[in-house]
Length: 441
Ligand code: PMP
Image 1 (cartoon, rainbow, N blue to C red):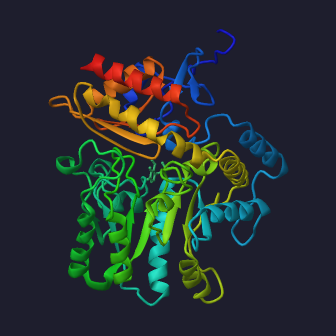
Image 2 (image 1 turned 135 degrees about the vertical axis):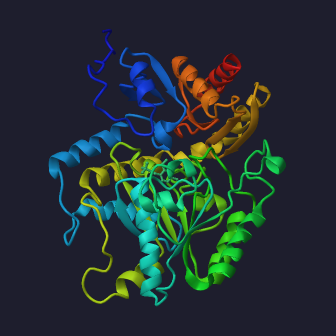
């Protein structure tokens, strides 16, 4: 072992790895053992540049001292205390910091531990809200094809990725999906928001015509991430907002990826100019140093559910770890860094360079589309005949071995670096990716 090397695990068998090809991995393990700034390091000390901010989450870069110290300090002060019928100061402070960042009027914050829990929490709050305002017939939830809202039964049902559902039998009833917004015939290789497709939001009118006043909420990712980066067409979210308002339907944004600076603003809602009624978040909230998610709602939603209920528990929902002290400490430190270092501003400043670098891959063999917005890029490859996803997976492995971490979903390469990324990092990411695409072709 050299100075920076770390032990490899002796036993790879026991950990049933999530969303993984366990058999392949265990025969060909690729391990990450340490992280700092823009980089991971393998157990042997080899650097791997982080092109994905972990999993779209380490927005401030890795190993941030301020966050580490806040967690250590809180662990010594108080490891855990319940937030059911009790409170601890740091959870309230964390909620207030989040509320300062969310759009005006979205000031109430419910804590969870993940994006999946946030999705299910948001859907439950929407249903509770409709019931509390005397609209208990509104039980229908609308998602969007290719949407990803995590892996709980709510998020999985409202999400629109068929592959995530196929092993698990019945989903939630009363769920419909709007069409996705991917339209390569009209929008291929668009930089930023596509021109075409705002009218796809009108499908909500058809669902209202079909289901009347039984729709509780519509849930979408402002920019769909996990499906392979789908940027909303210009005017699309405005139209969705108008239709929701017209028909008494809540609009929920899943901001698990788009929150905390990823689009160059605190939340995607700000960049896109359309605010939801409820928004979910996770990932960047704590820079992923401790798991934490949250759901923020308008005051109206909160007041309707909480102040409109008789004395006693108003929302029969919560997690043992809602507002966990270590996660709260990590969130406060992360959001302070976010402000002090103006991470959204940094993302905005480098976005034009990022966009050009991503689109420079257009001439690489087999690239059929490139999409980008904020510090996100999706590079879509033509699938290998008979083997969807195989080409991109080969590109992923090759990039890793060449020292750059990318993410692939189907045959789409998704990039989302920490927001502290600089031009030489961008050059290295895109250069290594281009070489890998050429080599695999
Ligand atoms: N929503 C969105 C938009 C996400 O991207 C993700 C995770 N990629 C989730 C929800 C689920 O988050 P988690 O994995 O923390 O449950």
